Length: 262
Image 1: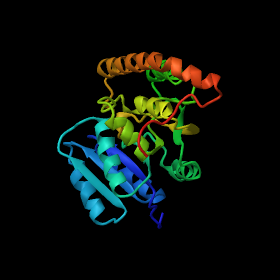
Image 2: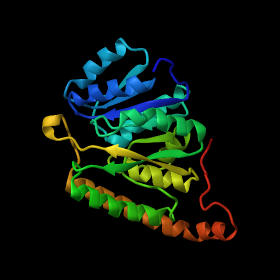
Image 3: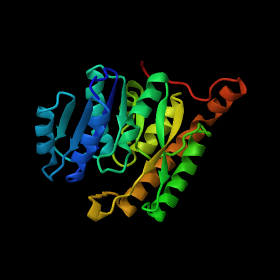
Image 4: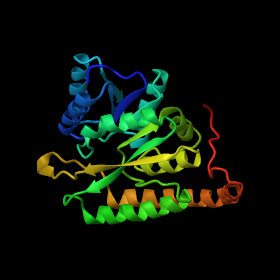
């Protein structure tokens, strides 16, 4: 990828993923420019090496946060910096090698054709996917369907997506949540509430073994409690919004309306 985009960038939050992050960044850079990495308080030394890589690559930028704040906070730091730099859209990509870098150009093209939408990866699992995780996300997707009145979100947890930056930053500034593992799901629900249409594209996902460099910070107890609390909040807010949403549908209007600033 020789010519850098002035509107769309790849944004990779990273926390202690070891050397796998270098492969992820190189794969992303082969297919897109610019690529930004947000080091979320990593203590594994990867931040220093990525900064050395960025010193040799004008299309790679590394933002280092002094302490671990969670995925959502890392994304917000990157999104705010990208907005200040004039970018309008960001493709979020995990640093652990699960997301398909070869699909970056296709997702970006779809976003450029539909800048009003969010382009969502819909995961296609292979045999490496833990069944407990696969079944758990079905439950989360069911709650998301209810919370958005069937807005068309194919998967609520898969983080390989293109977001419109201004709308997402506005959503995050208006409430204190979605700063950690709850970011991916709450982002799409609140954007759907704001009138940002979802477009789903199939994307393969691979769960890497430890001997393949796979690193996971998912904690089944802690993060499932976080997700349960998140869905309880979102469902309660859906019920509060329900009369207005149904009234808009009876009038033949879109069910959601963007209320933030442009």
